[in-house]
Length: 626
Image 1: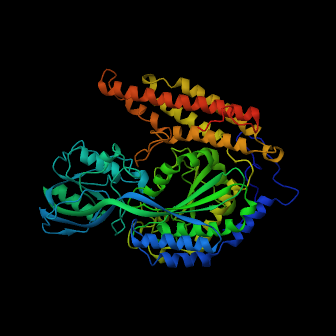
Image 2: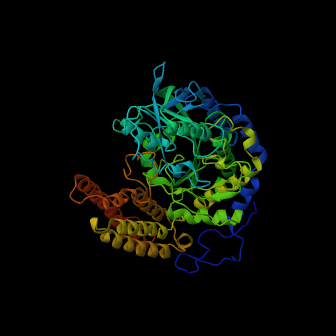
Image 3: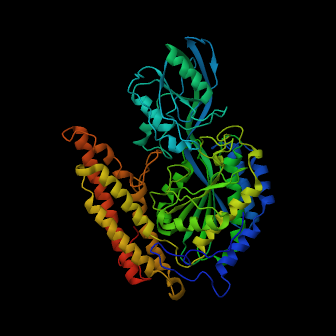
């Protein structure tokens, strides 16, 4: 990686075309000196030592090796002079066992097909189940597309009756299993969309974290299996040639387990504000690039930031999440639930690190970035890699458990090039075919690349935790509201009036622009910026749940992909329904309530942004935590 000690945010051209400060300071910049020192301190050899230890462990959540990994992390932190706490978390987990899939009718009767069960799929009786298998078509992913994006493409059941049958389809993930179950299928077999010769471990439930009484109904009630693309193609051909019957068995163990969650602080500043940096510690098999590399990166970041804690103005909290793979982000969701008030009040953002340091990766993919902090990710990746970042908003994946809390999210991941032979339609490992399989071993990581990735994350962390004033810019947030409200307004037409919230979004953009200008230079001249920082954090708590959730701050949305302003997205469907029908009227009522929610959030955001801009470092009058 080429290191460029370029100026941090606040010294570039802003979104309105105004120069924010000189790009040629006359004196050495202590912020840049700290960044350079931290980057120079990253040790590829130390990172390799961590990976070699993790390579000896199969870190199934709730298992002994996960706990050994947690104690290894805590011991290293103690060596670095940091106090680590191992929290004990009860999680509702599901461990997939063995599966069989045998053709019993049509040509090829008796043939065995390699299959894997899905976590949280239903178990079959020991003798299995037998039924006709039917193929349900689904669109193929674009080249190099990640599996999370492909899940939004629903299977076409128009010409297929799946009742009492085994569904074979590329419509995978929890939404695909739900669609099959709702239509009466007795089992779901997922055909992997890309051609690697491995069956990936996957999770069948859409429940994010521990279920509630209400969300537990979404845990699948049918067995869910996966097969390779090649085997799926043969099964599909057999389905089209005649009646195909199959017998399958699925072993799944689902229940409660105690998990270790390691947390360590690098404290700094007087206001108690901190950046949360997380990586999941559990894995499938050895899971070296998903996510031992992330665990090692956090350890190296903690070591270096601990050495330089006196130079930070805000703290950093590191967390190693359990329950990611077999609990659908159970550890990070537990933390969001049990530390809600503290996170809501004092956390200045969330940086998730998952699958760095993968061999041959070269292209930065900057997903998971909220608007108020996107400039941090953009500047760091551009300066240190020379690439033009493709900033994207958060996906519903990768321990993004804090959007309801309102935390600004940051993220950047290095990927294999699209034309690399190892690049497949997977969800991690830099796009490598070995994702969620026994092949994710030590040879898939590159400590030198991991060291460079860690330098990126250290620099992003420093640019959030070194400045006195939180470097938030809410103009891109307002633009998110505007662009998506306009999209939904066009889609809904006369069926739903969105003109009023469009006007509010325009007003919020004007208030955000005033706030941007008002905060320039505040950090240098104000004796105490803590009240202003608190106000900026409160503003993020207002806008992010509106932009990225349906359920809001206190519940958790399903683990399905959502667009920005997801509560208004069904307006597209509203325009296709008969206005006199129950479906239209029910959906119209739902959308009215969501419009009210967005209206209220924008009114609060306008008022708070205006107050912060007018009063400088004064807190909101009521001092309330929102």
